[in-house]
Image 1 (cartoon, chains in turn purple, blue):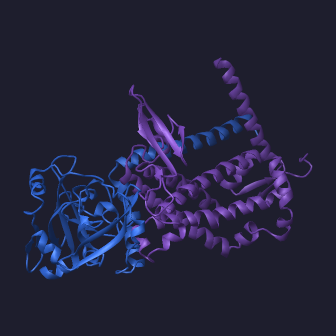
Image 2 (image 1 turned 180 degrees about the horizontal axis):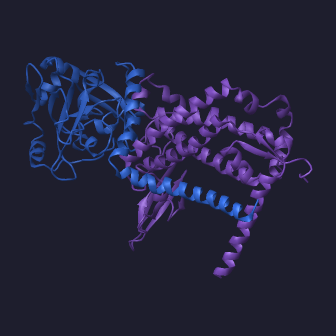
Image 3 (image 1 turned 30 degrees about the vertical axis):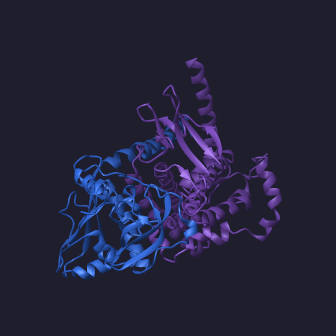
Length: 296
Length: 257
């Protein structure tokens, strides 16, 4: 058994190594990502991971979401994570979404703590910073890295405009718009450009990046600020544009979920469209363009 | 390229990725336990304080709501019945023996009964209470304006903070709840010592007979069961030195976010 697993792992590793060496040896190198973009990209990976995990710890202090101005408006929460104990003393986790109960024992509501004990908590300890339920510390992590995220965002937008990265690489061209149908089909068939076209982002990629940079992340930050009682006083009632303070908290959570979905799709695309070549180009800047002869 | 070369490079990348995730997960854990790292993280909240004070005008008002938005039940959090015998005795006689002491850096220290507090200029407001845990509730509060009280006792020039001492002993047994606010917040028109909630005398679970309302900050600043106000220049000598019960346990003194 152990030997068979060993063999499988070895096979996998050999395949990865083959892809890796192919990425190094064929075609010619092309400098695809500038140093500032690479630094800001990886900073974002760290900042967003910490913000997500400390955010889930903060959420655990009151694991329920509402669509209203307050939490106690006579309307039940739209999402609620809680634990339940049956008459035999066994605890289970229940997640209620729009009135429907789901058994989420082991993940939401109840999960194993670092000692392996089944305990009551919203999100499990391996997903939160700190792993203990520690609201004061989680807030420190969250607000510190929120500032870094904002700084990184301002730096990125400034750089992208000044260096024309935005213009050259991110804004879709007229031709991009025309090719949108074909790009969708290419994505569905997992067909990726390896030759000259891989030097540039495709139109769906551009739209996804622009959506994250100019819509999701600013909305995320605005909704974070909307939860601040001091900033709500900036112009009394502005939070009602977003249906009230508790709705703002819900949007903050939903946008976090949308960002997680983006990352899953993004990493998936990175893997299937040539993992080592993509990864290397985001670390060293250098992407190897396959010559058209190698390609099919 | 030789086979060995590839293996080392591959191994290196794998090891880098593995150690990165260990660093993130294990490292965060250990960093939280140190004394120096949370202090660095705390700079974020300090920056928030400075920025918010810069951006939000001194007299900016917290949002007020129509009566239709009132929460059917105003949630009680933390202490809902103080366990101290002194408080129990006061409550048993309907707070007729209650006295609020105001002292410290003032020209005229006073001791006020509840009827006297009710005679001070008052304010009624329907506001949203935001708890640090994440929930909100909307309630209608009536209380004495803290600004009127502070003007009556006349602050000394070196006065900087109002420390609020409460009647409720906390979980750890000995220490009583307390809080502190700066004068900018103390003189804000919506800062009141509330004695009514939703048109009724303030219930015990919400802080009877008197609780602080500080509408532009989170719930833990709004101390319940207020017994004494002390005007100070500096609160570092009081209890844990951080300006409040929860502040002494790691929460930020400025709770504007």
